[in-house]
Image 1 (spheres, one colour):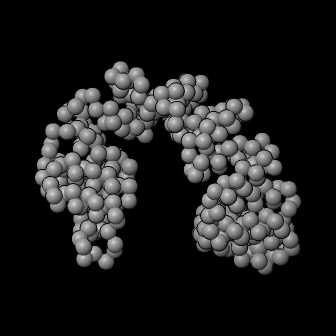
Image 2 (cartoon, helix red, strand yellow):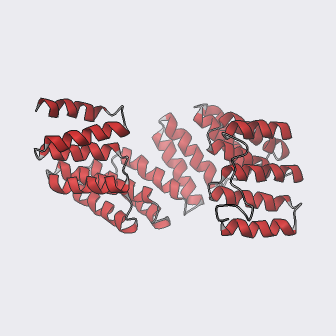
Image 3 (spheres, helix red, strand yellow):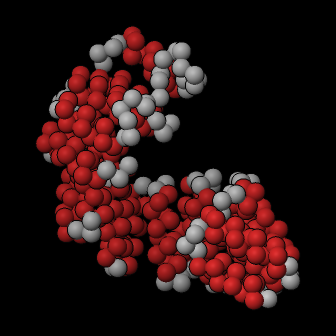
Amino acid sequence: MRLLFLVIFCSFFTACDDTPSVKKNTAEPVPKEVLIMNEKINADPNNAELYYQRAQVYRMLDMDSVALRDLDKTIKLDSTKSKYFSAIGDLLFDKKDITGSVKWFQKAIAIDPNDETAHLKIANMFLFSKDYDQAMAEVNTVLQQNIYNAEAYFLKGLIYKDMGETERAITSFQAAVQMEPKYYDGYIQLGLAYTKKKDPLALQYFDNAIRVDSMNMEGHYAKAMYHQSQEKYADAKKVFKHAIGLNRNYAEAHYNIGWMLLQEDSTEKAKREFERVIVLDPTNARAYFNRGLCYEIMGDNEKAREDYEQALVFDADFDLPKEALKRVKRK
């Protein structure tokens, strides 16, 4: 077990010794949450659950390499709990180490055949590889054990969505939000499904998502894009401006407002929006291209050329500025 862990650990991260230190003499301040867990572990150093809990703290702090080290310690102290093995599989899966994660989920299921987390993660992997039958089998295994598992219904919806079966996907997503009325992602998926059908019911689902988590910009973006796709630019801009009120650094909202202003021939206003995007996101190739387009429309071909060239610096495969450069050079 130790050898297997080291192989995965070292192959997954660029080096085994680059993990952030949690010692008191580290150059970086130790997060408060980690300090609390350190005290608990110092008081009870052989408690596997404490290492597991600290690993979850590290994951929330995006310190995955140290989290993996704690999970290794957890398993060495107690190899009888499936959730410890699932946690390693989950971490590796999130980092796209699909092959490495499978073994850990399988070990979790061997310990506890009813480990819902492990079954659903394996279903996710089958969905990733488009093995829909196997993915659905894993989901149904969970639902046979627990018909109230909202995540299982949600994942079933994703499977149907990937298969192109929109109505079945909608039914599954609806079941997910019925089981868990605050299931943000479930409302988003329902909104996207109805957006695809050009059904205004999409807006209600996006509003539900926003009520669950108003600071998550995904719901605001999806709602605004529904209006934008219907060319209801005034409604779309209203949603984006509300989102900016919640998050002044929301560059994507400024970008889309600029794009709509450009469609409305408000070139100077559009340019100012793209300039805001560039301030917030200095490597945004689309913003440079669109500001260049504004300059070109306004007759300033030199500044347009500079922006088109800058767009290609950040995205060499971006075809639109390539064509635009040919155009301004002819001018």
